[in-house]
Image 1 (tube, rainbow, N blue to C red):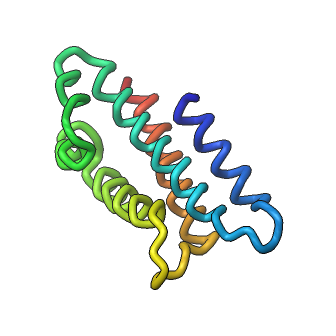
Image 2: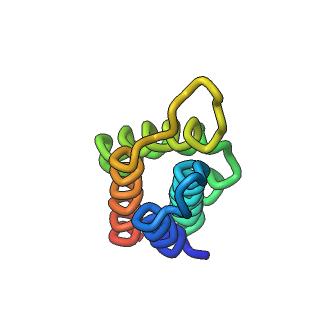
Length: 121
């Protein structure tokens, strides 16, 4: 699936979560969104030979390098979104799942990243 398709799947699941009593949908939305973010960044690095080597680095390293190539504010917000999504993907019995509003904000931010990357490439 492309990053845009993953994001569409996350939006769809957010709009229509699984039946009542099933509490895993926030984690599923977070996972789809994080996968979209990681694939978009990976595609961004691989699009140009001069930066393709960054695709082999860890995601954290890629996010550290992102402000050099994209607007710094967006890069910071994407870095925060990735960290928040990573936390939301893992089950923690002592933490609440992310709210629909938080998930929606992260989805929108990743959508902004995908749009920006498509314009740059």
